[in-house]
Length: 154
Image (tube, rainbow, N blue to C red; front, top):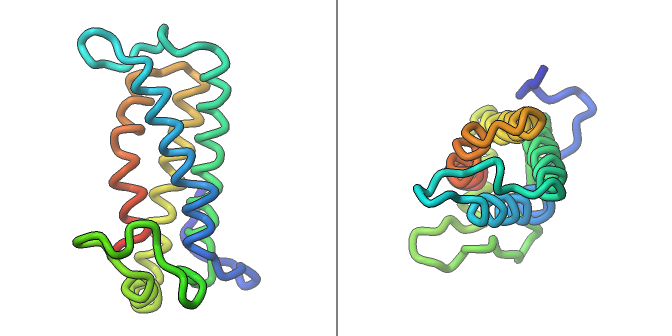
């Protein structure tokens, strides 16, 4: 069962590191595999996913689930180390590390809820991979950008 309630000994999460190691690279790899497995109608075709890619997709799902769990069960989070910038910081409309930290501090339960959403997405990917459910895999891959962005923006 997944939970968005931190334990008494839960660590403080480092959002930047979690996103850089457990989330962003996996999202890109997922989309790359999904894009290469599209049929002529633009639908994800499970038959076009090689067996080694199914194994990669399983790891991607587990990594996303773990990244979400880290955020969902943390006792707060640090958006980025002092002076560090977020990946898109400086781009029009992008949040700064200070903005994200302000959101995390003011709405910690909502922040953990976004982490829980990411954890559930990862768990859904693991399940879809286990059954080779290309339709579900496609839906989760399509929703991942929104889930991922909500974890770092207010």
